[in-house]
Image (cartoon, rainbow, N blue to C red; front, side, top):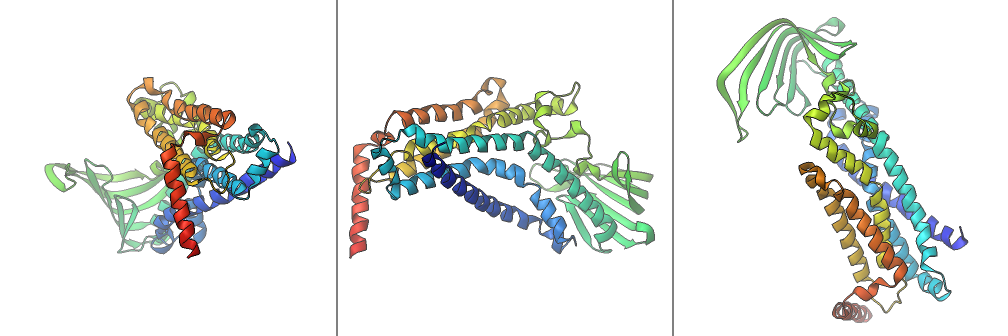
Length: 394
C-alpha cells in the first residue's frame, strides 16, 4: 500500500470511528432513557442499568455501520476535494483505482466485522440481555418490590405484595397478567417465593387462585365475556425464565438465534414450524448484510470520488449520493416484507446492494459521474452559489 493510499485510509477510518461512536451514542442515549426506571423506580444499581442498556450495542452498531461508513467516505472525499487534493492527485496522473482501493479495504473490514456481529455476537448479547432482565425481575420480586405498591415487571404484567416475611417469603400476592391481547389472568396467593430450579426461574405461589375471563376486544377496551373461570390451587409455579435466555431454544424468536441455527435448524424445531416465514426473512437479512457497507462506500465514491474545482457545484453530487444511499436502504429494508410473502423474493435483499456496487464501480472507474447531472440543474445550482457569494460580500 502506497503512502497516498495509507493517507486516505487513515482519514476515512478516523472519520468512520468518530461518526460510528457519535451515532451509536445518540441512539443508545435515546433508548437508555426508557430503561432509566431500573434505577429510579425499581431500585437497581447504575451497573445493572449500564449492563442492560449496553447489551444492545453490538446489534445496534451492526445496523448503524453502513450509515456511518457512507458519511465517513463522503466526508473524507469532500474534504480532499475542498483542499484541492483530489485535483492535484488527478493532475499528477493518479488512477481512480488508487483512490478507490484504500476506502474499499475499510469497507471490507467493516463488512467482515458486521458479519461476525450479526452471525453470533449480536444474538448472543440479546439472549444475555433477556437473562439479565429476568434476573432484574426476580430481584424486584424478592428484594425491591415495596409492600403496598404496584410494580410493573414489564408492559402488561403488574405485581403487588401486602408484606414481606423473613427468608424471602412474600405475603398477600396479587399479579395481573394482561400481556395476551385476547385474555388476561389475575393471580391471587397467600404467599410465595422465587425458586431457581434446574428447569428455570419460577415464582412459586401457594394457597391461591387464578381468575380468567376478561378479554380484550379489537377496539382495545377490556370487557368481561362471561366465559371466565376461577381455578384454585395449593401450589402454582409462574415461570419467570420465559423472559430470559434460560428459555427453551426452540421458543426463541428469529432475531435471538445464531446464524448457524438459522442455516441448519434442528429436526422438529417448533420455533421454525410456528414462524417459518420470520426465520426465512431473518436468514436472508443476515446473509445479505455484508453487502450493504460495501454498497454504501461505492455509492459515496461514485458521486464524490472525482475532482471538481471550486467553481463547480458539489452540492448536487452530495445530494445525489445521499438520495441514492437512502433509496437503497429503504428498498433493502422493505424487501423483507416481500421475502416474508414468498420465498421467490429471497434474492431481492442481495440484488439491491449488488446493483449499487456494480453500477457505482462502473461510474467510479469509467469516468466522471457529474456528466449525468442535467445542464439546467447545473446552471441553477451555480446561480444559487453565485447569489450566496454576492450576499456574503455585501
